[in-house]
Image (cartoon, rainbow, N blue to C red):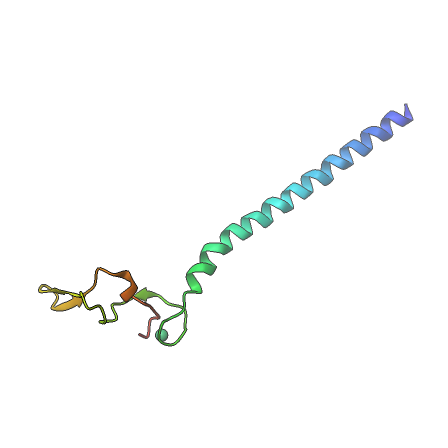
Length: 89
Ligand SMILES: [Zn+2]
């Protein structure tokens, strides 16, 4: 009788430890998933000063650039001529 009671106590203890470990694992995984996109967005450096970039802007160096008569500005179909820039540039 006493040995079966000990077995039940050991089993319940193992279940609690297992559930605790799963909760920690889920929390760690969720934290990693939350961090990754934010870190990726904030580490794109400004092409001029290296601060975190907020937008992209045409650099005016595309030999095949297009003229938009509506805005009076040139633009490019090549995204390589749109370097990332911070709010100040
Ligand atoms: Zn900048």
